[in-house]
Length: 130
Image 1: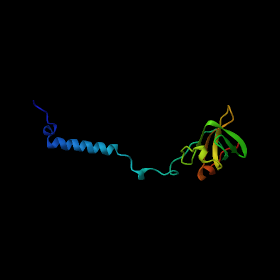
Image 2: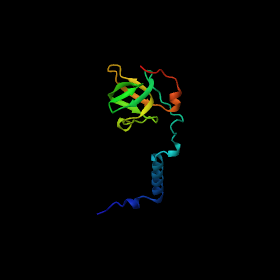
Image 3: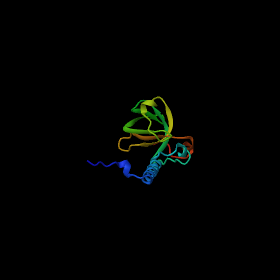
Image 4: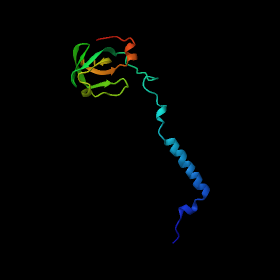
């Protein structure tokens, strides 16, 4: 019975070509270098909706808050974004206060979305209260 010996069929030049192809594929698939990432604040600008207002948000519980010293309920899908634009779990910030841009859900009057502001964002003018 005759068997095909793959290593014998590949000549030295073919092995070199395959090695080069694998090296190029690995270089293309490599993750980007961390030093190339831009830190937050250098070119990352958050665009807030036109309906967003400015205020001071104090988290009382995962469903209750104070917005500009008035009690308000948070919508079931309420999202709180950090200054780095990542989601903040509400149970981790109970008892804390933040300067925020926020959106109220028109049909229920509940707090729907809030963004914790950086100093630069807080310095930009925006309408306050509802």
